[in-house]
Image (tube, rainbow, N blue to C red):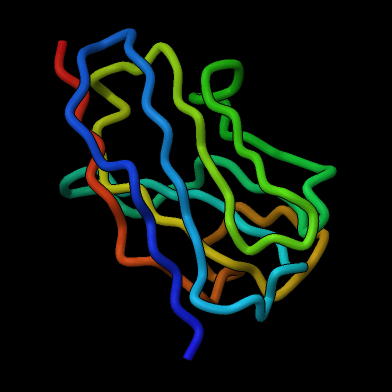
Length: 125
């Protein structure tokens, strides 16, 4: 059974950095696009960043552009999200997800059938 696991949860102060990682239990879907989403309390899950299967293309939500970096190795089902200059409004549960597509960098949750359990990120002011 395909499973995704996030790691790197933390409580940090504003303007600090944190790195999240996501790995899968198998190499299945290792060539598929992956993404990070976040869900703040009382809000819907929203797109953060996506990366293509070969790691050559990335796409970011405007709110994190220039502060967050998504990365993965080609053919790897492990990816990371480096988060810099964190803000209190970044506080949320962060989820990693795997797409059905290798190249499409979707921003909708419906495009990602595989999800991790989520990891909490809390940024204090």
